[in-house]
Image: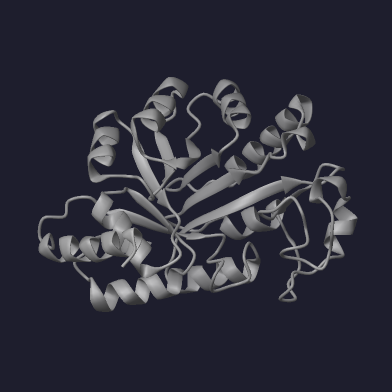
Length: 275
C-alpha cells in the first residue's frame, strides 16, 4: 500500500473513531464544476453540480487578446477544445467559434456571473490564471484583475462568499492594494507547513490552498492558530476527501462532486460537510 493510500485508510479510521468529536464543518466545493464527471468549466458542469446540491464552486478565468474574459483552465486550447494555441493570443470571436471536445460552447465570465446572480448560499473561488507571466504584463494584468473583480462583485449575493485565488502573487497583491477587504486565497503547490504559513502571514492573506501531499495534522493546527483558513487539494477520489478530513482542513475541492456526496451519505454520514 502506498503512502497516500495508507494515510487515506488511517483517515477513514480516524474519522470513524471521531464521529462525535468533529467540531469543524468542511466546505466541499466542485472543482471546475466537477472536471472528472463533467465537461470542465462549462455551464453544463456547473449546472449538474448545482442540481446535485452543491453551492460551492471553483473556476478559472483567462483573457483574450482583445480583452474578453473566458472560463478555461489552460492557456493552450488543445487539451479541452477543438482549437490550438494560447487563448490570450486569440480574439473573442475566435474563441466563440470553438467547442470543447465534448461539444459544448466556451463559457464567458459574463455568462457565469449571470448564472450565479441571485443564487443562495454560494461559495465561489475565482482563480486568476495569469501564467505564463509574459502574456499578462503589468498593465494588462491590472486591467484583467479590475474587470474580474468588478464583474463578480456587481452580482454578489448578500450571503455569498466570493474568493479570488491565484498562484501568481502579482494579481493577489494588486487586488489587495486596490480593493481593501477583498477575500483572497494563495494557491501553492507545496503542503501546509512552516514555509507556506509564514508566506501567507507575510502577504496578509488568510486563506491557503495547499497540497495534501506532505501536509500534517500538526501543520494544519498551527495554521489555524495563526488565523489561517486551510483548503486542500487535489480531490480526485473519495480517499482524497477522507484524507483531507483527517488532516483537519476547512475546505476541500473535488473533481468528483457527485461521487463524493453519495459516498459520504452512505459511508461517512457523521462527517459534517457543507456543499
